[in-house]
Length: 211
Length: 211
DNA sequence: TCTCTTCCTGACCATACGGTCAGGATGCGA
DNA sequence: TCGCATCCTGACCGTATGGTCAGGAAGAGA
Image (cartoon, each protein chain N blue to C red):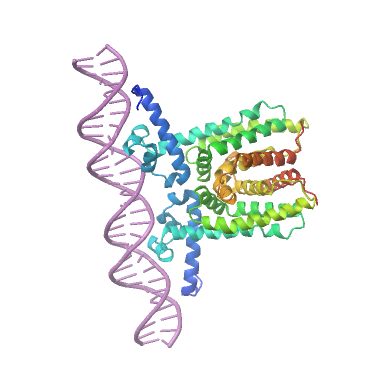
């Protein structure tokens, strides 16, 4: 049965336990919100005694903070596809694909993020005011350049960005509603492809994107 | 000073108190989520002792249920504009205007709704499975008819609806993020108009809407 | 006026929660 | 092998929460 499993080193134990706890926390915070989540629930899901959670993360807030910050990093990274694109077709196309893929693979993260924002960002407000503002300004400049180069219509870059965020994250945040409208079953591979195609088609045509 | 205010009748008292409580509950549930909301907070905001809340609404769940059901009615009613439109330009145009207006005037409601869905609709799942499914089928049929009549491109009606919901509700649910990106101040009248114009412009062009 | 129903609320209760802590187990470096 | 730092956890604690209740105030109807 059991392999001769080398006992874990202290470092490995810490890494593994923090990973397990963060994963469980992500789920519980997404399902119940910060207020509705309990350390006991997270502990149970992680398969650890509650006191052990407090050994690694001193408070519920600290644990939540860690979860949200990780998610924020992911959020920013999704724009890599955006950056070195020659024009809107490739840029927005790749960005939509990437964000919808995230919505599919990590819906919990999107929900935690949404929840944090809806509650007026008590934990990451400072990041919004610095990192997010810079990030947004940068992308808006790119979009404006594409407009100036005649590669797309003169759309307000700001509202275009909001539309991209809203539409892609909707498939995670409102996944339950979408699933219900899909007869109670999750979207299939083909349906996810259809979603991607629809979104890309409407947006790219909507902004008059030219190659 | 004080007018000779006729003392309120029992019926009026009940109406008025239920109204005040529901209004306060809407705000608190939106700010803190169901789990984070407390009856004490709602009571304070309503200016009533906590025990009085339990006189009108026996449990926290009952109060929440009432709030959510009211919101669901609003949600459906926003489609009135949709119904008797001759084509996609008027139909989607009016729907986008109506939903963005709601997002502006009642952002709390949108947040409560979003929260309920994100938590897998514990309270209104039955409504989703019946009323919402019917509603959606009806609108999809209308859209399909417009497609068949050559009034717009052959877009998957389902994903088009999701896009409309996502984009319009984003301005309420993520209003804090938008406000932060707007220098910390709420959108002005002109900016709301710009939002409406941008959304309508992209979507109507995106689906090839013809009058 | 008298009675009945509705409205109101301070004080109280059981529970569940976040967090603490003493003390034991265990890997690690010397 | 020894001493130390890290890891682990059952038992415990103070507090806040949802909810109850007895009893009083006040319209409503006869």
